[in-house]
Length: 352
Image (cartoon, rainbow, N blue to C red):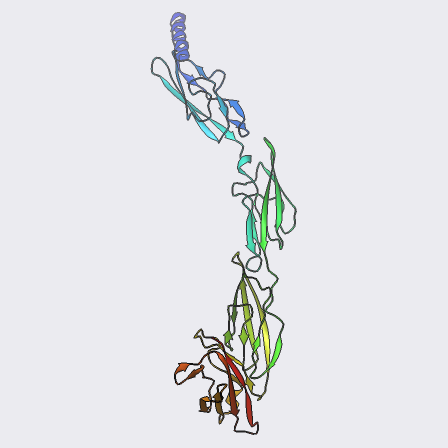
């Protein structure tokens, strides 16, 4: 090939190279939320045959999507695609990432609450938090698993406000606060106590609050009014009574009380009857009755008329006479033990 031919070839290659369409979307950008930056290179387009058709996609956050160097306002991290078509329908594309700092998405998280009696910790910190390149500082350190993690475990025994500082190398410091509310209750089933066999006793829970619900339970003894703060119990033997209190937050608190029972054969005559079929105090009860199986019971009205009589009474009188309810009022009994204890007398009042 002579010099002239070589020159022609080189000229052709140079012309062809200059005719190639080249697009450059520019270097990736890192910005703070709501900050602005310009994308595209300098120049963004070389070669090809003008005029050019320019399209940036998506158009989100762009000042314009049909210019070589649009301005971007940071909202979210987005990959922009630049597409250029020249007058001879040659098409080239390139991409650029605009990375928006996540600091605004991070924080202390939603307020938390828990029942101290049922749980012992909660997780605080936004689920959007993460390390690198960010730094976290939690304060106070009280009851925290640590003070530098994006999310930490808090186990306070009292309601506590926690503050987190989130430090971004690019965008500075963000401060946020979360409140951990701890629900607790000072409660008691009452002090242990002692009764004689055949007696009953009223238990008293504390506190007495209409916003609380109460439930008493025993494995060995029946309980009257077991959903009140002051139930009646008459255990035959020493028994434990378990109290569960639930507050308005759904938290449960538990305590127990022991009722010691001293052996006794003394008869205990209860002086009231409320026969309303509610399951409580519907029959007239005599404590330690089973120790006097040969007994004889008579009940009289205030005029001396006998309205009930039975041998070997079994704690089953419901305040009736000839199958009909007796009116409210005071009635009188004579109880013959048929033993060395002799005859016992007293009164009983029917309430309706």
